Image 1 (cartoon, helix red, strand yellow):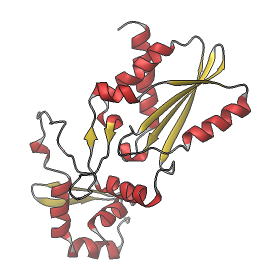
Image 2 (cartoon, one colour):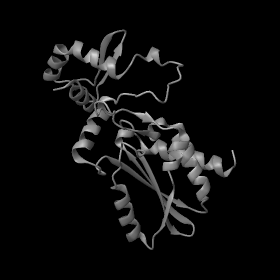
Image 3 (cartoon, helix red, strand yellow):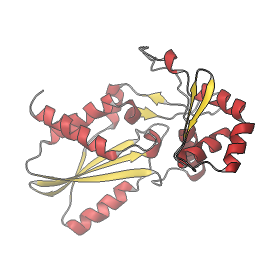
Image 4 (cartoon, helix red, strand yellow):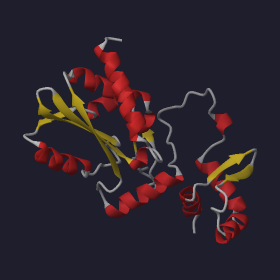
Length: 232
């Protein structure tokens, strides 16, 4: 079992692992860690400590420091796993996380698109792509500038005739794969059901963040839309 696999196993058990003052710290629910995992942790403590230091630099190095966007940021261990599966399976929608929101009433589509841009500008994870180095083919995180991300994120609008067609369109769009090397890990689409009724589909790839919650994302879009409509 590699360090990445061991840490992923701990994460699945609800455990948290971090480095504090050059010491390996572990917090887990009572009874979650098996004897086998305890032995792995004991035998590989130094290896894990070194691996975590390389993957997650000390917090003090980043406090109040402006990060160079050209910097090649390493993938987290969870992202490494997803990238490996992506390379094995190819472009697919297996790890897409979709959320469809029904909107009723008058809709300002221009303000909605601007609100989406505002949210993507605020959250770096939503404008991060995962290219590979030319030297060794190793993937890394590349945070796009807001303007570059805007060029990719366009609000596509499509008219549907009825709920059956809507359901089929949502299913197809939610399962559409993303090319992680160059595409944003977020896709949006707006379906016009009626003159005053729409359905907004948000699809986020899981590599954008461990356990990314679409609830907060939807609330951010709602608040940004309200601000745009009111001209703030």
